[in-house]
Image 1 (tube, rainbow, N blue to C red):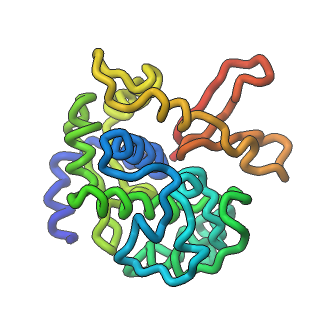
Image 2 (tube, one colour):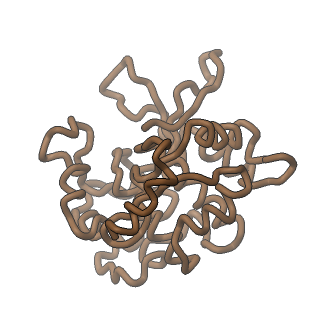
Image 3 (cartoon, rainbow, N blue to C red):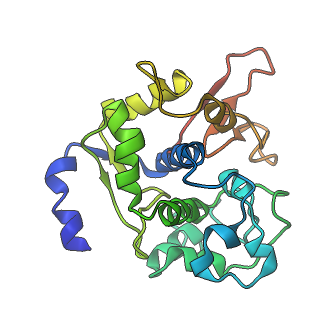
Length: 246
C-alpha cells in the first residue's frame, strides 16, 4: 500500500491536502451514483448498503443514508475537541486497522436523525457504500463521472487502512482544480452544457438541514447540509453562502 502511494508522488507533488473538504467531494459522488442508478436513494439503510459488515444491531442497521449525509446517525463520538487531544475519536480511529469497524462498534447516543454530531468516520461510511455499490475503487468512478468531465487530472487520494479511499480527509488537489469543483456547484452542477451533478443534489447539499451546528455558541451560527457548511442561509437578508471546510 505504501509503495503504491509513494509511486504517485510525482503526480501530486504540487497538490495540497484539502483535508475535510474531501467530505464535500464524497457527497457529490453519492449524488452522482444515485442519479445514475448505481446507488439506491437516500432512505436506504446501512444494513442494505453494507451487507458484508453484517450489522447485528437493528438500530445501527436502520441508519439511513440521509442521516449519514447530514452527520445525524447518532453514534457516540467526540471530535469537537482539539485534534491534539488523544481522546478525540478522530485521532483514535486513525490508529486502527479498520476505521469503519471502529465506528460501527460505537454505541448509539441518540435516535438517528435527532442530533447533529460532527464525525469524520461517518463520511468514511459513504466511501465504502459507494465503492461497494459500483464494484470498483472510488477514484476510478470519480475520474469517469466527476474529475474527468470538469478537467481534474492530477490528484492524489489516499486509502484508509480497510482498503477504501479516505473520504474523511484524504484528497490532495491543486488550487485551480479545487476551484473547478466550486464552480461546478456555482453552476448548479452544469459544466459547459453537460449536467455532471443533478441540480437538485446541489440544492440539497446547500440546504441547512441543521440550522445551527453549535447552539451553545451564539457567535457561530453555521448550518450543515449534505457535507457542506451553510454560512448564511439568506433568511436574514444577507447573501446566501455555503462552502466546504478543511
